[in-house]
Picture (tube, rainbow, N blue to C red):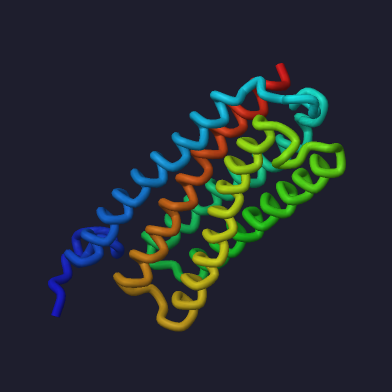
Length: 199
């Protein structure tokens, strides 16, 4: 039977949980390398528009701000969920996790709508090297958010069935790390992909 240290937060109380969380930090390191590579590719193709539209022709600050506010607010609500988890309040944890997922789903909806608009305006992956790298970078991030939503739903189901245990707390904490990581990546996307092109 695993030794439990009740002086630690619930998700850190067993050695296995601590190892799992440490392993997930290593995984996030690999994700940083992935996104750094995509940012580098996008940066190297910064002005490769061919005969297609440019970002200034298409980007709308208001639309991007809606996506940004949805995702950054979801990071805040995710933090509130962990706050409730640390206080052993399952109901509060579930409520704030569901709010987080609704905000994340809103982000994905607006991003897909944005992509459809760009395609209708003539900006497709094959239009130019710039938009090829743009869609790969943002599509990879959007796919990660979508995976995070599905993953969090699975965690919510486990929490509803099993309650708060060291295992379900660890799973919840790990998905929160993943979610915050995606928000940090979006800040870089917003700053270097969108904002730098609109000022």
